[in-house]
Structure formats: C-alpha cells, structure tokens
Amino acid sequence: MRGFPGIGPHNVTKFDHFLVRAVSRQRQGNHDDFFRYLSAAATKGKLWFGIAGVMATVPGRPRRAALHGLLALGVASAVTNLVFKTALPRTRPSPDHLPVFRFVNPQPTSSSMPSGHSASAVAFAVGAGIVSPAIGLALAPVAAGVAYSRVHTGAHWPSDVVFGSALGAGAALLTRKWWPARPPEPTPRRTPADVPAIADGDGLVIAVNAMGGSYTPETGELLKKLFPKAHIHEIAEGEDVEAAVRTVASRPEAVALGVWGGDGTVGTAAAAAVEHSLPLLVLPGGTLNHFARDLGSNSMDDAVEALTKGWGASVDLGWVVVQRGLPEMPETIELAMLNTASVGVYPNLVRRRERLQPALGKPLASLVASLRTFAVNSPTTLRVDGVRHKLWIMYMGRGRYYPADHAPIRRPVLDDGILDLRMISADEPFARARLLWAVVTGTVASSKVTHLSEAGSITIEAADQPLALAVDGEAKANVRSAEFSIRTSGLRVYSPLPPAG
Image (cartoon, rainbow, N blue to C red; front, side, top):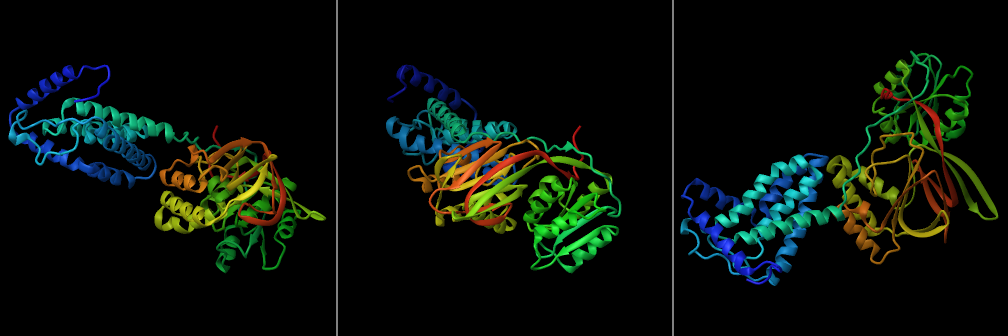
C-alpha cells in the first residue's frame, strides 16, 4: 500500500488486519445475506438513485435534498474512481482473511483504496442531510450499513472505508459551498391599511377588460350577481383601456375600485386607484394573476370575502418613466409596476415555463424552458445605472422574489421598499455553456454569470439599439431608457389574507 502521509503504512495494515479478524470471528447467520444484498444494492449507486427517486416525488425540501445528494454522490464517485484509485493502488483482502461464505463473489478488480461504495453512501447521506437534517439522520444508518458491508464481505479493508467515507463527506461539503442553501423565505405578511367594508358592491366601481384573461359572457353575469349594487363597466375591443379605467375610477359614488383582467390591466387600475385615493379590489380574471396570487386572492370567493370584511393592506407601487421613440421625436410614458419588468429572453422563458408547468410541474418546467430559451436566443446589450452589460436576462421585481435564481416565483412580502434586480450576464467566457450548466445543476443563484442586487431606484438605457421592455407582461417597443422607482406603501388593496399583528 502507498499513501497516507503522516500515518505509518505498517500501523494502518496492522489495524486493518485486527478489525478484519474481528469480523471473521462472527458466527454465520442471516446478517451475512443482509450485508451481501445491501452491498450489491449500492453498486453503481443503484440504491441511492432509487432513494432519490422516491424523495423527488415530494416537492420542496425532500426534492432539493435528493438533488443535492446526487450532486455530492457524483463528485465523490468521480474523485474516488478517477483520481484516488489510480493514485493509491492497493490489493483487496483475500479469502484467507475471511470465511468463504462471507466473501464477496466475484471480488472487484480495481484498487481497494479507497472504497467507492463508502464514498458514494456518505456523500449522498451528508449531501441530503445538509438540506434536510431529518432526511440525513434517516439515511445515516443506511450509509453506515453500506460502508460496513464492504468490510463484512471482504471487498475492502477498514481503512479503505474510512478514507472513502471521508472523501464522501468532503464532496458533500464542497458541493454545499458550490451550491449554497437557499435563504429561508419569510412568512407571508401584510401591513394593515384602512379600507371600507362593502356589501353587495355598494360604492364599488369595477373596470372589466373583456378582451383579456378568460372573460366570457358568464363572467359579466357572475360579477352582477356578486356585486348587485356596483357600477360595472366592460371595456370592449378597440376601447382605450387606460382612459376607460380612469373614467370608471372618477365616478362620484366610488369608494373602491375593482378590476378584472390581466396583470397589465391591474397595473393600470392601480395607477388610477392611487390617483383617486381609492382602495383597489383585484378580481382574479387574468391568465396568470401574479399580483392576485401574491395577495392571496386565488379565487373570486377570496376577493369577495376581503371586500365584505374590510381586510386591507398597504403595498408598494413601482413607477416607471419610459423614454422611447426617435431621438428627434421622443415620447415619454409613465407606468405603474405591480410585479416585474424585464429585458432580454425572460418573457420567452416565462411563456415556455407556464406552458409546460401543468404537465411537468414547476421545477422541471423551469429547467426545460430555460434550456430551450438559452439555447436558441441571443443576449441584449444595455447600460444599467451607467454600466454597460451584455445580458441574457435583466429581470426586475417590485419587491423581493423567491427563489433567488433566474426564474423567481413567489413574493411573500409586498411592501419591503426594494427593486429586486437580477442580471444573467453573457460577458463571461463560454457564458452560454456556463449558464446551461448552472441551470441543469440548479446553481444559477451562485453562478458567476448571475448578478443579484437590490435598490430603491434603477435606470436602464439602450446601448446599441432600442430595447423591448416588458412591464407586468405588457411589452413596450423602441425603448431608449427607463427609470424605475418605488412609491412605498403607495397603494391600498383588499387582501384576503388577514394582516399580521
């Protein structure tokens, strides 16, 4: 045997033989078959892939623990088999050291040092346990059993198992540094706001975008039934949505403004509500209903309950000043931003993800959509706060979104006063390959192509050619610059989640 700097090979050999003799003195029994089957099950990672498959059926932490365990296993297996088994050649135990009935058959022919089974077992258990300590604790006896089985069946010396286990633990810790834990998401909370409790829609005015979302004639009948005393205006095809919403909000009897439509229509209504000092009732009638979902208003019943009970919350309102058009004929428009703005391939990614999500679920749909999008699209060049960037994605959230990667989904707090800026850079060498690797391995948040920051105001400018800017899903073409800011607690909304405190 070669290796073990600082440890005498002779002493290690004596210790190995001492432990193997102790194993050989055990009586024959059912435990021999158990360890033989356990060792065979772990060959080539079959046992761990099976356990990971079961864990992956449970969304959330178990699924992330499975992925982290497999990443650690992959690193440990590669290092063990490609590096150390070549660098540390060692003969395996012979039948002289253990009873024939206990000896593995056929015995592996590769170097005994270190134990690949032990490295993979410990890597998976520790890797999964870092994400979920409870799962790691449950896996620990299984990993220990696999490691011991390699000595019990004569496949390895005890020192091989110890060294392999250390490699496995080290691989798990290495991947932890490479794939850091997601920060914990705060519990959804609301800041209370005074809003009038309204029954039967008395004092409620509603703007309905009949051209958006999933509107049908039955929708109009449902709104009239739910709010018999409300003024309901259906915005028809060809009608100016912004002008219609403002007209509805300015009615003298209005004490609250309701809106039915997509996120773009809801953003327009939010601006009108602030202008007329009205609380906003969001009726989930759009295709995606991002803002309604963040409010907790997932159904019409949720919205009606908040209205009738007077549950209100203060939320921040993003404000965007857009300069677009030709330099000699500039046009300035101002937009309210409730959710997000983006430049680059992000809108394409979201559309693909939402289309795949019903069949694949969110995590896998995000992965497939990302691979397709980044494989075929090109980056965009722009300046962010005066600094030039070549980007795949510039994503900006009104409020902090989770998870901290390229495809955020949830926003538990609606009045944190920040703009959540995420840039996926194309400036680095092999940027596309590095990005695709980060997407596959779930390491986008920690990748060098990802730049995460938060601010109260941000300015973007076109660098080479005008930009296409999407605000709450509504695209604006020929954009030369855009200034983003936050109006803290600028909007009162009916929220079906009772305010905390």
